[in-house]
Length: 162
Image 1 (cartoon, rainbow, N blue to C red):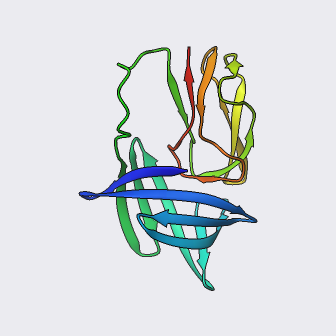
Image 2 (image 1 turned 90 degrees about the vertical axis):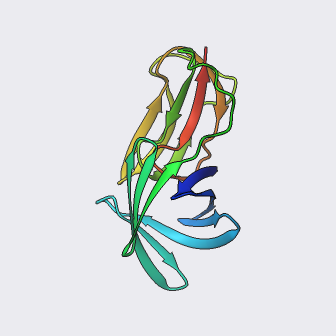
Image 3 (image 1 turned 30 degrees about the horizontal axis):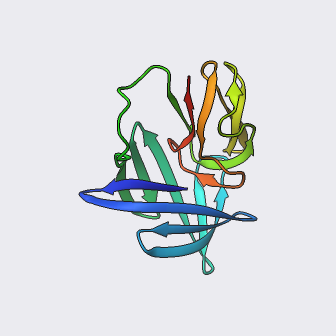
């Protein structure tokens, strides 16, 4: 799943693809890195690459992410999507991952009608399953979640309408 982030004044495109067995391919701009990620119960993420490990901590605050990677600190802000605004219609909803984790279940498909409270996607974070539920009756307009995918907190997983 690709997301765009502002790092200071610089825009960075980030894509994270699950390879299975806790391994991921992470692309930041044109740099590609394959690594293993272990999600610890205390919220830390241990990243392992080429025999070395680094601890990452990510704190979500609205569109901002405060990231500590080893001893380096970053403040990232989600870049505008570039999509035309629909005027904030109350008939649409973007449902986001509550925290960094792994998508374990996708229970609906794009175009499917759903009822308020119906489970749509499950994300495992901190050894707990978090269900993303429909906030109202409607239809799934876009499904961005894929089973096995590592997602950051605040990343859109489902868009609803109707």
